[in-house]
Length: 377
Image (cartoon, rainbow, N blue to C red; front, side):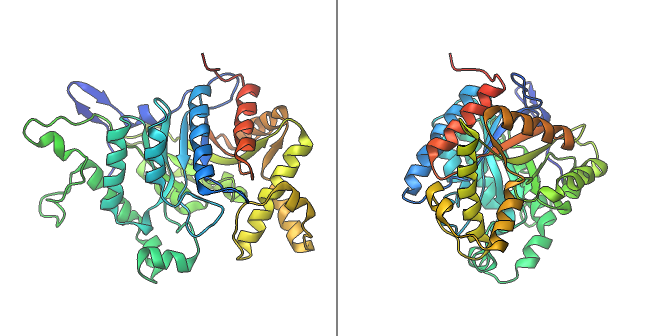
């Protein structure tokens, strides 16, 4: 398998590891980051959700969060993140330092060349700040995945993921070998521009991350020496086994000399514990509807409180919310500290799912305060 490399340009060498490992601020046990699903609440619009994303990205940058990722989802009314590259370009215009990336792009949904072009363009917009997180799941239901891919052979796409990853990496590095049918095809913006007369190319290129909720990507990331992101927020029972597998499989590479794993964590802080419970109940009702084939906008806490949960639905809600770190700021801090100790995660990426954008912004403010993260000048 072809690997990502650091690149030397104009006497300045930039290694991928420099762009992967974060900095810990305040009393946080590890770097803290943000995962944004661009959730849309009942009575709100996608425009409202995207304005919240801008507010969150600016807040995250000001308070010392390391990176801000957007996830690819499709055909879900309550999630307006079907086009991560478009959203990231928008966020790049409102930020200056924070890393921006996909958490992730579902590679089987796209031609590798298209992704290389999109993220090469993002890198040109925000040099040295772009991450390319890749997943092998569709990010939606089977019918929607078939419409995206214009094929009904969905398992084939997942099985071909290592080959798709290798092709994408070749496009990013512009180094297909002689004789390869793509040797004369170049992803632009990209390294080929540096080889053109008078050409100068950025020393940066988006580090590739593998994302997963099971062991497949964990093992692959380890074998390739790539950073790994695990979806603890919806597959908590697999977190420790997957991280163990990643670390056991890890082989040092030109990207990393040691494993680096972050986990996505559902976390919501509020000014009092009761309000936090109300907010996560609404988010859980949204998941109940999604899991039973009734996806919709994120309901209000009032709607969730009035909803007549069946015994099976109530059991699901209790199980789901058991893995949502929620409560007051101090309770969330304690829960995150405990989770980091149990998993040994190198970074915590927090996702706050709630009906209102103001609630989500307040949650990150409270968590930043609880850890004594930097405050704006």
